[in-house]
Amino acid sequence: PYAVTDGCIRCKYMDCVEVCPVDCFYEGEVMLVIHPDECIDCGVCEPECPAEAIVPDTDPRAEKWIQINARYAAIWPNITEKGAVPADADDWKHIPDKENYLLT
Ligand code: SF4
Ligand code: F3S
Image 1: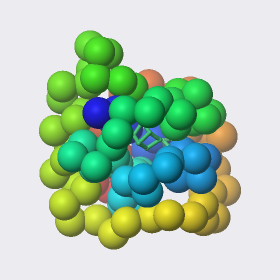
Image 2 (image 1 turned 90 degrees about the vertical axis):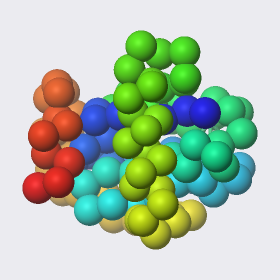
Image 3 (image 1 turned 180 degrees about the vertical axis):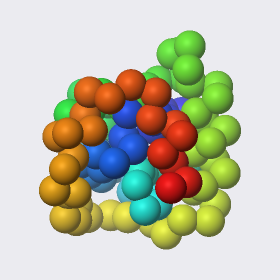
């Protein structure tokens, strides 16, 4: 499956949600995740993300992030339509290693 990585944190552009054919995105306060068991590996979400936060399972970071995505997809609500993007999303877009902001 594909996975959302920390690039999404505090950006949450949600363009990915608009294109996913199986609606397998789940929404937390600061980021979205993909349910690994529901993703059909179509790949259309990856180029849609302005923050380049979505990776395929061949990416070196995928193993760790697929686990994180699975954990939160089980407890966060499903999201099927793009909502309001955070006003400061662009300020966070190029900040590296945002994992520490996941639970703040
Ligand atoms: Fe949805 Fe396809 Fe992205 Fe998987 S790869 S999350 S099925 S758009
Ligand atoms: Fe996040 Fe990119 Fe989607 S910033 S909400 S993974 S479009």
